[in-house]
Structures are given as structure tokens and as C-alpha cells.
Amino acid sequence: MKISVITPVYNAEKYIIQAVESALQFEEVYEIILVEDKSPDNALQVCKQLAEKYNRVKLFQHPDKGNHGAGPTRNLGLEKATGDFIAFLDADDYYLPNRFDAEKELFKDPKVEGVYGALGVHYYSEKAKEQYYSLFGDNLTTVYKKHDPKDVFPGQIHMRGSFGLFSIDCLTIRRDSMMKKLKPFFKTTLRLHQDTEFLFRLSYYLDLYPGILDKAVAVRGVHENNRITAVDSKKIKPATTKVLLWKEVDDWAKNENTIPEEVKMHIKRIHRSYRIALAPTSKKWGMIVRYLITDYKSIRSGLYNINFREDLF
Image (tube, rainbow, N blue to C red; front, side, top):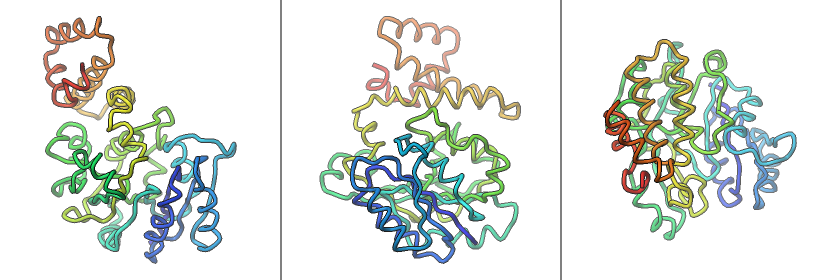
């Protein structure tokens, strides 16, 4: 196996060495693609030192040396990758020694186009744990049991509460399959949740198989400056970012003839629920009443998918 590990780097001066060295422990890792995204800290200099120290570490920036966000930054990493397989690793996360154990066996079968595993959590400080333990706990982020590849997409979309979710840090993809079947890669229109949208489409187009689900193969590092925790801590209203995510998913699903109609409708209803959440109070009740009359399940779906009291009002 020749695995290209793609790592977008932003504001990760304190963590990037650990991330890189956790990937270097594997002979299967052919290269680590660092794409620095105009960090406000000293991350660029640390990345330069890593690229000088390790011949498997390659450093890139956007042509304009600007900040473009995680989606375009991962896309640039994909353009530069030359391995047969693609894996991702956020700059403040790290791999565990069992990260590619399942992949080494499963990818012997050519029909396996991707493998996903379980993500653990580590709090870098007591303050981070105090702030975010209620969000992440000590839980694994994973699909909770093994499913046939054809069930992964509808499971991610339609049964998210019981099916579970997999993380991009624990995903390994056959590069040729992704290049042939998935375009665009990460949506540049999304500043946040672009990995969630990517995983939805990936699980639709590619046959993804479960790897190690009962224990972590990688670890999410939680600290006070995570981009996603800024959203989850209500610095940014969650509905603001989620409505953009589900608009992208809804627009995409409309044009895919083989997606079952009930799944398309479920996506539409989630999109509607976040649109209601973002609407001015003067319009909100009118939208609720209209959907109660014309499509009650839109309201019921919204109650399931968003925090009705906090996100909606």
C-alpha cells in the first residue's frame, strides 16, 4: 500500500508535529501532504522544519499564499497526492498504532473502495474538557455496527440517530475510485461541514466497508481554538452553518435519479427545518403553520434533527 495522508494546517503550531509523527510510524504512509492555509500562528515555520527533517513530508500553500478554508485546502492536497490510497488527518488530531490494520487486509479485495473506522477523543487541557465534554464525552465517533456498503449512504442520511457517523480522520479511500466517481471533491462553497457533505456523497458513489469500529484508530484533539468547537459552543448559531450544508445536500440529491424518493424527501425536510430556524421571527411561525398543514413530517423531521428550543427559537 502507498498511502497519501492529507493534512490541512491552520493555527496548529502546537499540534502539527504530533500529527505528522503519528502518521510517519506507518511504512504504508508513502507521503504526508501538508497544505498550510495562512495560519495566524507559527504553523508555517513548523511545517517547513518538518518538511526539511522528513523526506516523506511535503509542504504546499495556495498559489496566492492566502487563507481559503479546509475544503479548498484539502482539495489542493488531493491534487498533489500521488499515492494509491488517500487518508486524511486534521492537524490537531493524531493516528493510533492500529490505524491501518484493517485496511491492509480489506484492500486486498479490489471491490473495496474505502474503509472507515472509529475516532476517539483527547482533551488537550482541562479548560477544553470543561467546555466541550458535554459535546464529545469520551465516546467513539463511529458507525455502530457493520453494514453492507449499499446501506451506508441511506444510513448516514436517513437513520443518523441509530446508525452513527464516521469521521474523515478514520477514512481511507482507493484513489482511482475517488478520482473517477467523485467530482467535485470538497465543496468550496462551505466554510464548515464540508467534510460531512463530502462523506455523504462519498458513501453514495463508492463502496465503503467497515474497518475497526469497537476501538479508536485515530483521535480527535479538542482544544479551545478548534474551528468546529467555535460553532458548537454557540459562538456561531449552528443553524446558520447547517442550513448551508443541507442546501448543498438537497441541491445535489435532486439531480441524482437513483437516490430513493423517500431519502430525497428526508433530505429536503432537514433542509426545511434549518431554513425555518434561520427565518426572522415574523416569518418563522408562518412557515411552521404552512408545513404543519402541507407536510407535517417536515416539522417532525426538524424536531428530530435540530435542537428545537435553541436552534429554532
